[in-house]
Amino acid sequence: MPELPEVEVVRRGLERWVAHRTVGAVEVLHPRAVRRHLAGGEDFARSLSGHRIGVPSRRGKYMWLPLEDAGQAVLAHLGMSGQLLVQPHDAPDEKHLRIRMRFDDALGTELRFVDQRTFGGLSLHPVDAEGLPDVIAHIARDPLDPLFDDEVFHQALRRRRTTVKRALLDQSLISGVGNIYADEALWRARIHYERPTSGFTRPRTTELLGHVRDVMSEALDVGGTSFDSLYVNVNGESGYFDRSLDAYGREGLPCRRCGTPMRRRPWMNRSSYFCPRCQRPPRGVTPG
Ligand SMILES: [Zn+2]
Image (cartoon, rainbow, N blue to C red; front, top):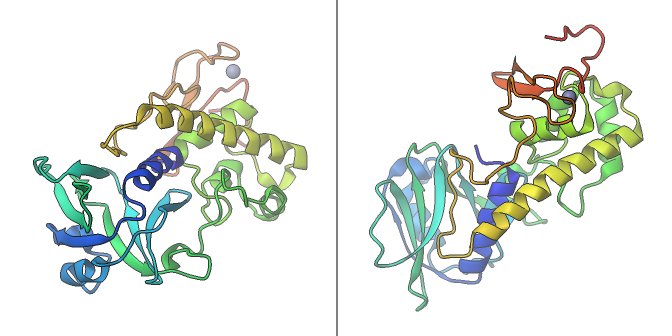
């Protein structure tokens, strides 16, 4: 799954190439790509056509194209392999092209949703007063959002009877932090992933949030510099960035801080990577 920085790069690409254009003909080439739009592909196409697209928006890993004056937005689900590409009309269709969106202008490009595994798709939703699609109204702000409230997060963290990595992945507390960036931020903060959050002090929360933001911003800087073409991107499966990771995927390799071999442990159907020396387990958790 793409993480926040990848999605933000896609959003920026769409802002550059698609914002303020009026939708023309929409073609749905595979029904699965609009399965979240219950009224079906034809209705989806008809509902979009004629509307001007506003500035593409994002919250956490969710991204949408607002339709101006429609009170609705097109939510993009990239799933495992979904890509949004801006292509010239005469570019050959991709093998797994699912949706084509043309525009009512002479720029000569169209938006394509390409998805090999068809877990992703596009869907249309009413937006609330803040412009948020109704289906993601429960998603918390992400740590790069200027309106993210550190103090509210800290209080919620302490109240929640949970452990720190669960909290970082809880989209109702903080959005956009996935497994990879959680492991990276925890390694930087020298915090074990099973550490209970009830004992977190304000300075510790602040430090952790700082590392989360650094990790994401660094990834964004890398991704933000490598796209500058019509190819908006993004392949969520292979990982878009040339990530220089300190924790994730480094099982058995020496910790970049202390040299101790890094460990991997199964965690909620995924893995957690950590340094057993820098990130001491809390009492009652076996060091593994
Ligand atoms: Zn270490």
